[in-house]
Image (cartoon, rainbow, N blue to C red; front, side, top):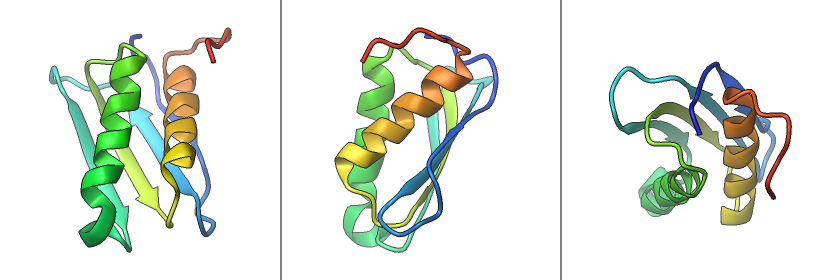
Length: 94
């Protein structure tokens, strides 16, 4: 999946995460994470983001994540939605 534009998903509400995915010039996934629980769960949040993008076939992107205590399943869903929007894909493979 190629990231062509900016894609967003999520909110800034409690127990949610806001994900913004943008095209990248480098050949890697860069994650900029803001979270009140980053010390405890930052590594896991980053892992879920990278694993989800890898499963979707995204090899390069810039991800800006603002976490408000989201569970892994919420993070995964938000990353999927933002990636599909950023790739401008209208048919989803859930």
